[in-house]
Amino acid sequence: MYNIGDKVWHASRESTQERVICPECFGKKYLTVILGDDSRVTIDCAGCASGYDPPRGYVTYYKQFVNVSQVVINKVEVTRDYVEYGSSKGECNYRIGRDTDFFSTKKEAEIRATELAEKWNKEELEKIHRKEKNNRTWSWHVHYYRSQIRGAKKTIERAKEKLDAAKLHTKEKQ
Image 1: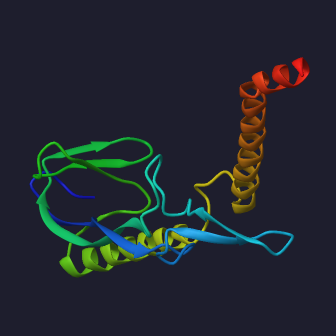
Image 2: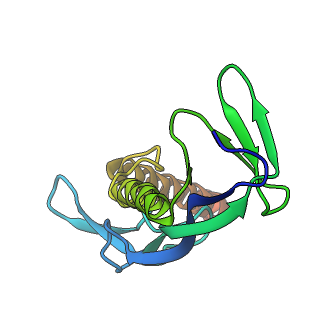
Image 3: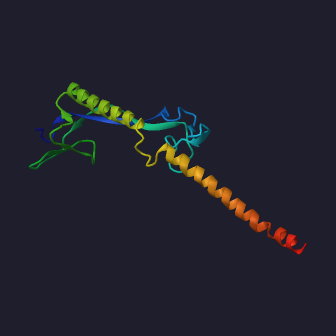
């Protein structure tokens, strides 16, 4: 346990936003789908689209890197479950439980910060290759838009029939 006034090393990680080519469309911004009759259609890639924005050809993630800094303990709060330390960094408080991020030596802090960054980076890169953010399959998108086309064609035909009503009346007079 550390005391007020102790200088300790804090292990943490910082992040920077990185881009990687979309693992779904490989940067093309669209996917080619082969239908059951072997015809092909293309659809926008939902893997690299963000909200209502069009596909970008890349996905972003936050890459973590090691950040080790020396701090001075200015607050110690002990409870049944944890010890919380306040540091000289200002209003930031760091909680120490089973996994501590404060160390007596810089080397120990660097090892812990490296572990944190590596674990985070591995999980982030795995997430990119999982289609977890999309609640529809690629085939659902194809089905949906093809049904939109079929519906639009029916609407056009109905509209043409309504506009050709005069032709029907002229034929009846003859």
